[in-house]
Amino acid sequence: MNNNKKQGRYERIYNQLKELLVKTDDHYARMSTIIAVLHHKVDYFFWTGFYFLKNDKLIVGQYQGAVACQELKKDTGVCWAGINQQKSIVVADVEKFPGHIACDSRSKSEIVIPLKNKTGDIIGVLDVDSNEYNSFDEIDEQQLTKILELIYL
Image 1 (cartoon, rainbow, N blue to C red):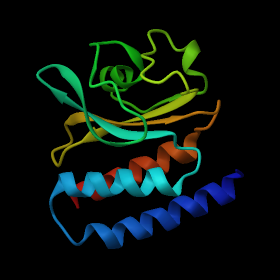
Image 2: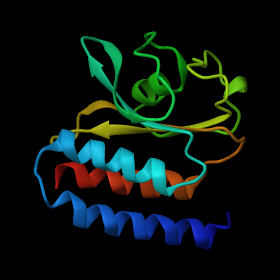
Image 3: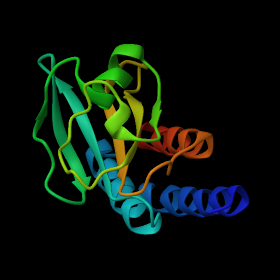
Protein backbone atom coordinates (compact mmCIF):
# COMPACT_ATOMS: atom_id res chain seq x y z
CA MET A 1 0.00 0.00 0.00
CA ASN A 2 1.43 3.38 -0.92
CA ASN A 3 1.96 6.03 1.76
CA ASN A 4 -0.88 8.31 0.62
CA LYS A 5 -3.39 5.47 0.70
CA LYS A 6 -2.15 4.31 4.10
CA GLN A 7 -2.30 7.83 5.55
CA GLY A 8 -5.80 8.31 4.20
CA ARG A 9 -6.99 5.02 5.65
CA TYR A 10 -5.64 5.94 9.08
CA GLU A 11 -7.29 9.35 8.92
CA ARG A 12 -10.65 7.74 8.17
CA ILE A 13 -10.16 5.23 10.99
CA TYR A 14 -9.21 8.01 13.41
CA ASN A 15 -12.33 10.00 12.54
CA GLN A 16 -14.54 6.92 12.87
CA LEU A 17 -13.04 6.09 16.26
CA LYS A 18 -13.37 9.67 17.46
CA GLU A 19 -17.12 9.46 16.80
CA LEU A 20 -17.52 6.01 18.34
CA LEU A 21 -15.51 6.67 21.48
CA VAL A 22 -17.54 9.66 22.69
CA LYS A 23 -20.32 7.24 23.57
CA THR A 24 -18.47 6.10 26.72
CA ASP A 25 -15.78 7.35 29.05
CA ASP A 26 -14.77 3.81 30.07
CA HIS A 27 -11.21 3.33 28.85
CA TYR A 28 -11.51 -0.47 28.62
CA ALA A 29 -14.55 -0.16 26.35
CA ARG A 30 -12.64 2.37 24.27
CA MET A 31 -9.67 0.00 24.01
CA SER A 32 -11.93 -2.84 22.87
CA THR A 33 -13.47 -0.66 20.18
CA ILE A 34 -10.07 0.54 18.97
CA ILE A 35 -8.81 -3.03 18.66
CA ALA A 36 -11.91 -4.20 16.77
CA VAL A 37 -11.89 -1.29 14.33
CA LEU A 38 -8.15 -1.49 13.64
CA HIS A 39 -8.19 -5.25 13.19
CA HIS A 40 -11.06 -5.20 10.72
CA LYS A 41 -10.16 -2.04 8.81
CA VAL A 42 -6.44 -2.61 8.18
CA ASP A 43 -5.98 -5.62 5.93
CA TYR A 44 -2.38 -6.38 6.90
CA PHE A 45 -3.16 -6.57 10.65
CA PHE A 46 -3.04 -10.29 11.50
CA TRP A 47 -3.18 -9.96 15.31
CA THR A 48 -4.15 -6.76 17.10
CA GLY A 49 -4.22 -6.34 20.87
CA PHE A 50 -3.02 -4.98 24.17
CA TYR A 51 -0.65 -6.38 26.74
CA PHE A 52 -0.86 -4.80 30.20
CA LEU A 53 1.77 -4.51 32.91
CA LYS A 54 0.47 -6.31 36.01
CA ASN A 55 2.72 -7.18 38.93
CA ASP A 56 5.85 -6.86 36.80
CA LYS A 57 4.34 -9.15 34.11
CA LEU A 58 2.89 -8.48 30.67
CA ILE A 59 -0.59 -10.02 30.51
CA VAL A 60 -2.80 -10.14 27.41
CA GLY A 61 -5.82 -7.86 27.34
CA GLN A 62 -8.32 -7.05 24.60
CA TYR A 63 -7.37 -8.50 21.24
CA GLN A 64 -8.56 -9.73 17.85
CA GLY A 65 -6.94 -12.60 15.97
CA ALA A 66 -5.62 -16.06 16.79
CA VAL A 67 -5.25 -17.19 20.40
CA ALA A 68 -2.58 -15.11 22.13
CA CYS A 69 0.19 -15.84 24.59
CA GLN A 70 -1.46 -15.09 27.91
CA GLU A 71 1.73 -13.90 29.59
CA LEU A 72 4.99 -12.73 28.02
CA LYS A 73 8.27 -13.74 29.66
CA LYS A 74 9.85 -10.73 31.37
CA ASP A 75 12.37 -8.72 29.36
CA THR A 76 11.92 -10.92 26.29
CA GLY A 77 10.48 -10.10 22.88
CA VAL A 78 9.22 -7.02 21.09
CA CYS A 79 6.57 -6.05 23.65
CA TRP A 80 9.04 -5.98 26.52
CA ALA A 81 11.50 -4.04 24.32
CA GLY A 82 8.83 -1.36 23.89
CA ILE A 83 8.28 -1.25 27.66
CA ASN A 84 11.97 -1.29 28.60
CA GLN A 85 13.03 1.25 25.96
CA GLN A 86 9.87 3.34 26.51
CA LYS A 87 9.38 3.76 22.78
CA SER A 88 7.68 2.26 19.76
CA ILE A 89 9.40 -0.70 18.11
CA VAL A 90 8.96 -1.63 14.45
CA VAL A 91 10.23 -5.06 13.40
CA ALA A 92 10.40 -5.92 9.68
CA ASP A 93 11.17 -9.62 10.30
CA VAL A 94 10.33 -11.03 13.74
CA GLU A 95 12.63 -14.04 13.25
CA LYS A 96 15.58 -11.63 13.24
CA PHE A 97 14.55 -9.95 16.51
CA PRO A 98 16.58 -11.26 19.47
CA GLY A 99 14.35 -13.08 21.95
CA HIS A 100 11.23 -12.86 19.80
CA ILE A 101 8.27 -14.66 21.37
CA ALA A 102 6.42 -16.68 18.74
CA CYS A 103 2.82 -16.84 19.92
CA ASP A 104 1.83 -17.70 16.34
CA SER A 105 4.37 -18.88 13.78
CA ARG A 106 2.43 -17.12 10.99
CA SER A 107 3.49 -13.69 12.31
CA LYS A 108 6.25 -12.17 10.16
CA SER A 109 6.47 -8.50 11.20
CA GLU A 110 5.36 -6.52 14.22
CA ILE A 111 4.85 -3.07 15.70
CA VAL A 112 4.60 -2.24 19.39
CA ILE A 113 3.44 1.13 20.72
CA PRO A 114 3.70 1.92 24.46
CA LEU A 115 0.29 2.49 26.06
CA LYS A 116 0.21 5.36 28.56
CA ASN A 117 -2.41 6.24 31.14
CA LYS A 118 -3.76 9.75 31.83
CA THR A 119 -0.65 10.71 33.81
CA GLY A 120 1.76 9.52 31.11
CA ASP A 121 2.90 6.31 32.82
CA ILE A 122 3.37 3.28 30.58
CA ILE A 123 0.76 0.68 31.54
CA GLY A 124 1.24 -1.72 28.64
CA VAL A 125 1.57 -1.86 24.87
CA LEU A 126 -0.46 -2.01 21.70
CA ASP A 127 0.92 -5.00 19.80
CA VAL A 128 0.13 -5.56 16.13
CA ASP A 129 1.42 -8.47 14.06
CA SER A 130 1.27 -9.01 10.32
CA ASN A 131 1.61 -12.29 8.45
CA GLU A 132 3.71 -10.45 5.85
CA TYR A 133 7.26 -9.10 6.17
CA ASN A 134 7.94 -5.34 6.31
CA SER A 135 4.33 -4.37 6.95
CA PHE A 136 4.91 -1.48 9.35
CA ASP A 137 6.60 1.91 9.01
CA GLU A 138 6.65 5.40 10.49
CA ILE A 139 3.11 6.10 9.26
CA ASP A 140 1.79 3.15 11.28
CA GLU A 141 3.81 4.28 14.30
CA GLN A 142 2.60 7.90 14.15
CA GLN A 143 -1.03 7.08 13.44
CA LEU A 144 -1.35 4.28 16.00
CA THR A 145 0.19 6.55 18.64
CA LYS A 146 -2.37 9.22 17.75
CA ILE A 147 -5.21 6.69 17.93
CA LEU A 148 -4.12 5.52 21.40
CA GLU A 149 -4.47 9.10 22.65
CA LEU A 150 -8.24 8.74 22.10
CA ILE A 151 -8.47 6.27 25.00
CA TYR A 152 -8.14 8.93 27.69
CA LEU A 153 -9.75 11.98 26.07
